[in-house]
Length: 438
Image 1 (tube, rainbow, N blue to C red):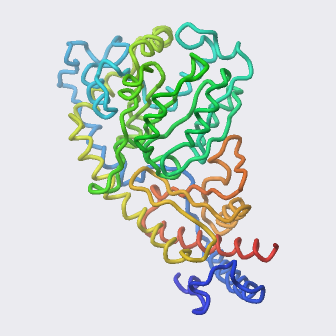
Image 2 (cartoon, helix red, strand yellow; image 1 turned 90 degrees about the horizontal axis):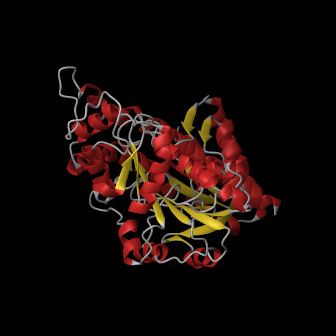
Image 3 (cartoon, rainbow, N blue to C red; image 1 turned 45 degrees about the vertical axis):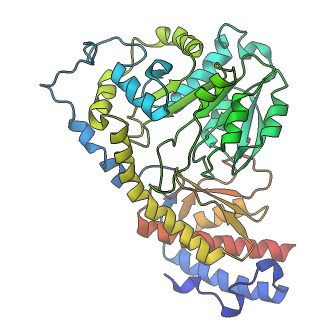
């Protein structure tokens, strides 16, 4: 497996852009041989989505047995969790998810199994009936949303579904370009912005204190502008001793005199069981009351048994953190495997850059401009499926065709090592072909 990754010694540290055409042609020939050897292995590996692995799912299997038929299945206020009622979530679940979200229980509503569903529902309500009594977005015409890029493809799919124009906002290690954000929100047609503020998807960046404060202090022209703060990875650290810190946005908004500016979403989808977790939104009292206006028409109450199951399994925030340490023990070797291969095989060659996150689910790789689609296609040809190039941008259009999302979580360490090595060969081959074509 290692043979096809050996370099000619005189080319190990030489940037591809510094090679002569003859050197590039020689290298191309060698890489094509390596690629042919890989294809002959008949690999079938999948790094396309940030799915928890089977080992991670097994960590929560005790939750299946935490409620017994002989147990008292009432919440702490005495409501039978098997029956109807409790629109905004049982108190102990609000307390648990409130701790996870760093907000008081009275600032949170517990929903069903998916924060994506809550975000979609929120967009639908804004489009159909408006925000806090204001005119429905759909009636205002030509509304726009700000989209930090690269970003989460499902956010962009939702916005596109509702016909909302999306505007790219470049990301840095500190978060979105706030100069651009502050300028765009002067337009009353700009109604919101997507944010994954901690261990962002796909780069793994965490917004700086200054960025969070600037978000909290925004003065949008549109009174119905909202920050969609998707804090999906708030407790998803890879290291105990090297965790990113994120200021709590609701607190900062209150300090800035903007209490209604943000919707803060979270869920246990990658904590317990994806598709069977619990989701929540935290917001100001006025915003929560606005959410409830549609909730009372949608449901008599979400799955309280699942809420009770989560509370009795995790117990409190300490239980959540201890559980996430077990997740980290599974994820950390996978991230380190990919990063070690990238460092060993691509450092110094000038054909790619990549992030080194402290948590979350992804690594972002930036190839030479114009190469991402070809790299992903080559990888697929060699038996490794990755997230489609362009997916991390609105409308699937990466203007530089360079960003690739790497999702290390689902494969085994052994399969991941094989996939990472396939990936670097594809990066090298496509990069050489690009340089030869210039």
